[in-house]
Amino acid sequence: MRTQISQPDRSIPVLPAPVEIGHVRLPPRPILLAPMEDVSDPPFRVLCKRYGADMLYTEFISSGGLIYEAEDSLQKLEFGEDERPIGIQIFGGDVDQVREAARIVDAVNPDIIDINFGCPVKKVVCKDGGAGILRNLPKMQRITEAVIEVATRPVTVKTRLGWNDSSIKIVEVARMLEDCGVAALAVHARTRAQLYRGDARWEWFRKIREESGISIPLIGNGDATTPERIKAMFDETGVDAVMVGRGAIGNPWIFRDAKVFMETGEVPPRPSWRERLEVVCEHLTLKCDWLGERKGVLEMRRMYGGYFKGFRNAGKLRAEIMEKGSRDAVIDFLLNFNDDWPETQIAVPAGRPASVGVKRAVLPTSA
Ligand SMILES: Cc1cc2nc3c(=O)[nH]c(=O)nc-3n(C[C@H](O)[C@H](O)[C@H](O)COP(=O)(O)O)c2cc1C
Image 1 (cartoon, helix red, strand yellow):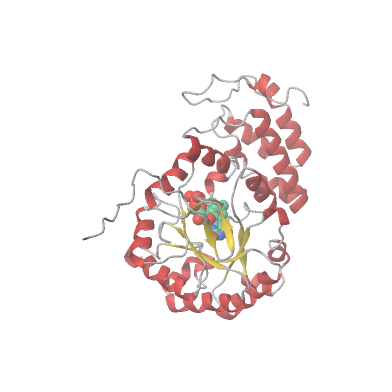
Image 2: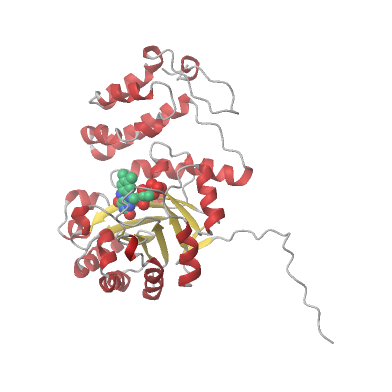
């Protein structure tokens, strides 16, 4: 008599599992902050962590800069204990230099060492750094092996689909990197030739998973710019984690919002003016503490677009801030913003509560 084997009950949802990158354990469906030069520094990372980022990456750091002890490269190695788990990202096209840089990175005890094989910038790719290495896979393998040889922690890679449309080798690359011992692979689903143009090609995530047969976590990256798109990347592509870059610039709330959206189907209301301004002022202050006032004020300028997106007169507001040369001048201006731009209102998308006048919403007590 044949034993009846019961079929799995498809009506019971399969719970997403935690994601493990070597010994680093992340919650199910983790959302990571992407490495971004001049953006993913400690001030910004701390804010993203506060609002729910499950793992943080540093900006990329030049291997040569680390070896020759360039001050700005060494500064990028710094992170706080409250930023863990954190990956430090390095780049370079010289095998021995990258190995040496990995030793230096390993000594500062991050959770992960990440190798950048995706940067499209000319001065990086021309020396086989970043995405340049996509034209020389044997060397990519040697660099990866060299880093793994000296690292005492998981090594991950972030790369692109290929150099251009006629040389998309990501399936082969994924297999090769797993064989080297890489603990997770992040893919920005564009080629180097695309730079940031066109849509990220999410269909490749499934192809990578199915055709390469890799079992290490696959981290999807590219155009996951809203809570809805973050959820869609998880749902439609089967990636293990989503990495968010531009969507977090001036919007550290995106991590929290995406988690709430994935759980409830509702995107939380936009942060009030008060919360927004408090975070902007904190971000600016942290930046100035970190980089010195002059550089902090300058670098902060690329954040305002995101922070004030969707508000009427945001363009005028940004233009005015650009003229302020000190931390106090920016903060002073922001705190008095409601007087200068009385007609400004929060632009409320359909279905949300009616618009809130800034005069009422901005710092009513402490301004
Ligand atoms: C300002 C900026 C700086 C970046 N710097 C880095 C970097 O240092 N290392 C890296 O791997 N990618 C870097 N990237 C690429 C992002 O990590 C990410 O792959 C890309 O922006 C696509 O993701 P997104 O659509 O979520 O922004 C940078 C992107 C931007 C916009």
